Image (cartoon, rainbow, N blue to C red):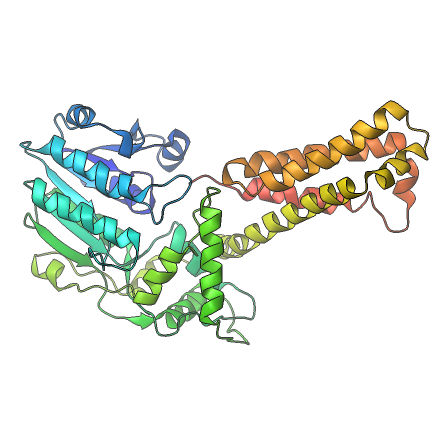
Length: 431
């Protein structure tokens, strides 16, 4: 078989494509910007670690030497601290198409169902611009547009869907009129293999999707039953303004490095409907995509599945709780430092240690409370909270051991906070 390069090779779709292509006999190289993420996805694969939008035309020409197929599975949902939609969806594809001009290779573009130049979100508009560049510049291409991709892995919208289905006793009704179709990630990967083998014609644009549609609440209910949770007791309808406020808050967190599936782009796409037409793919000779029921039958709902769903709900609550707690302890001390200093002076602590200990500790508390909100610093901040809490416990044994016998237990209550910080450190994982 031939040689294939997969852009975004450790992503949800890209990783499945790399496995399917390798199993089909292709020599596969993945491209992505994070070496740790690449090695966790597939430590035995051949990787090129580069930030895809930064690759120049000349560098692309070197990378494309001897390559038969390029699969572009890279992408981003919304602009943020780590993502630039125009760069990844438009600039990178423009450079790739220019470098591929005249080369005997096929470009398989993973786009999205519903893209258009006048779409309601920048994600769909920039995807459409990239598709248009490919159509105008490349000689041999296939554009595949999946609907909502379901996979054993859980990222973005699929992770949110699992978490929303796992809310205890509640099944919030969000956007009850939104229509959704799904596609199994294995069907997307098989479609890429078919395109790489030349089993579908060049210049094909096709949606990859099941035929049935359903409302978003119905989809959530189906996933809830698949996970094995009991039927909800309450089904409150979430007002539109609450959903919009959640989206704006998630957008702000995006600038701190969090790729929340609740950002306005995802919510607007859901509101517009995630639907496609499978006819073009099937008429071109592609195998029909599985239905939702067939997909869920391929994905066993194990104990690990349920634990992930609940952990996905618990993690942001834990981070928010820790941030609030540490910021408040720092601010309260800074607003009335004399009161805190009195605790040490009353116990005959050396005068030269009192001020620095109180003010320094308060500033450290505030710094850690803010740092844990920044995605890049969440794990270091959680470790810092564990370390500083340990220092406070040891210091209290030396300077104020009587506090351990206080009926309100101010020192004993440090341990639950340490356990929460440890939980955050353990659950954080870089995609």
